[in-house]
Length: 354
Image (cartoon, rainbow, N blue to C red):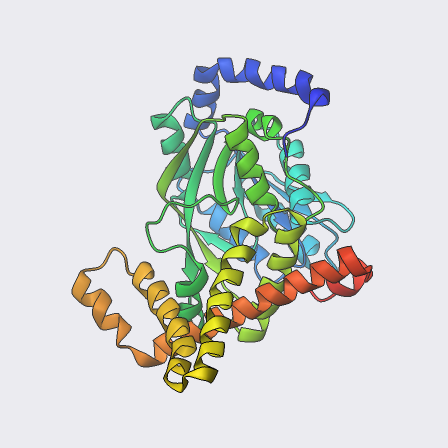
């Protein structure tokens, strides 16, 4: 969130750096970019990410990994990679930290003013960093460049899940999993909120808008995001998302819309008890939502291919089922938030389930 008067001195300094736009732009254009990675228990993915960064067509000046108290081999693997890395790899070790805190620590430790953000559990394309920097070159006034991400979908389940909650190919997104930002933008937006497991990025983007920080997009700067491989893991993740979305005060952007859908479903179910043919409406509404997800996902394909995809019944049913399970997770996470805030259930009992 945007800080108040206490941040005025920092904002003045940030504005002064912004005035030297040519200097900031040239820094990015010549590749003097730090890459920052927040991490927690990422022993299964951290080496793959570091190797992908080492293979970039535009080599970063350094990688800063901020580890928030991992209990697995994440730190050991980062240290081992740093010994054979072609550029500096800095490991920032802290106690138990959530993504916002880890990202803040990494940016604060970075030696460059231009910082590329990427998440553990993702794999950037070889030209990811180069594409981000090219966008900064095209728009020298921009202080944030948003890239894109795609699903690392290797199974039928994850391909269906991608239709539900991953942006369609080519759809502009704002994500801390693929972006380049100038330190002044990070300071003007008040840095990342540190007490949330998720939604801290959305609050940061709202703060960027409020501070009128110039942004641009790099639609070809892709990272691949590894999706949760099972329905149970997907439910767990979206329960945490919903709980933290409520803590962030963003219910209007997610939960209220889902609630409206289920109020309509409930009304149609009650009507069906009076007039039985109307009982077909609830499953029809759910299937229509699944079909809309599939239609949106294939937005760049021809109309005939998009229509044909809707007749893939197994995929339509699985997409609809995943969508429904995520809705249930939304309600469950919201309930967990409610009992913590209004009933007083200790937060540790719900956080342990993340």
